[in-house]
Length: 356
Ligand SMILES: *Cc1c(COP(=O)(O)O)cnc(C)c1O
Ligand code: SF4
Image 1: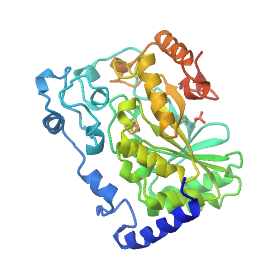
Image 2: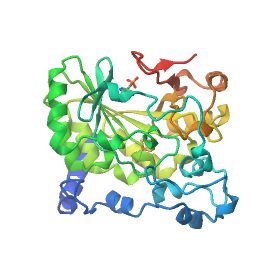
Image 3: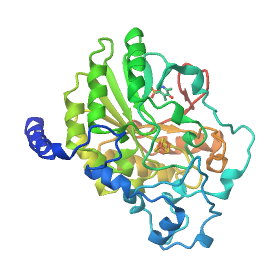
């Protein structure tokens, strides 16, 4: 590995050169950094996607027009990893709006996680001991059809710059919080400048020891892993962990690998969480391949979540018994550290429920 000192020097040189290009806030519509320009070219209609992938709408599995409340959105980078002409591609199925989303299924509701009960300040959610989520934005760079965001009005809960002080005050007041988890939406969609400012303020709170970032951007927009981000994470006094979100090995191409290698220079612990999804990764083969690929790029599998039962997602559900079987098969063929914990979010429980 390159020595960090050398690496940071090169980072700084590069940073200074890049500085005039960077805008001060995500609220501004200007998108001048490379990743922001990439984001501006994201694909926003299934028709455009089909053109790029040589797919005919009528060969797709019951596709439908997405609703305005949860529109179609995907980065070109993610699309470049979808196999052309395959209507059952595991990446395509994560983003393609389907008729099945309209199906009403018992037990699937708008807010299965009941997070509203745990909002202690604007953008701050504390459910579990010692750690709290800080939602920096409600936006994502990709709309994953299985996501709980599709039904939960996160727009109300992303912390506005003006409200951040209230959340920071609550964190300062709550001495039992040792870890802040930046979440969203995708917290890395905010600019490096805003992130730096949030980090700076968090690091002055004496009882905070750790910072965790839950983000899908290193996977769906690897350019987001900027030199500035690395420097920021490497230099904060807080111990840092970055949890990425990939569900299938095919998502992890060489651009993601490069981004993860770069992230390792930040001295962060790198973890992955996945959701167990029917027709996408619901086999020991698919999950073993994912784990092997994660380890190859320096990432430890952390959680394999059972689907949160949000309205419109029942077609993705894998039942608990099947999930356990797949998980046991995975345990029987991989080293322990390569097996993610099979977990489920249970409202009101003091921790995520580990199954099996
Ligand atoms: C998942 C989650 C966490 C983090 O849980 P870990 O088990 O520490 O990964 C914290 N807060 C909320 C609200 C969560 O949903
Ligand atoms: S929060 Fe994560 S899973 Fe949900 S839409 Fe955004 S990137 Fe996808």
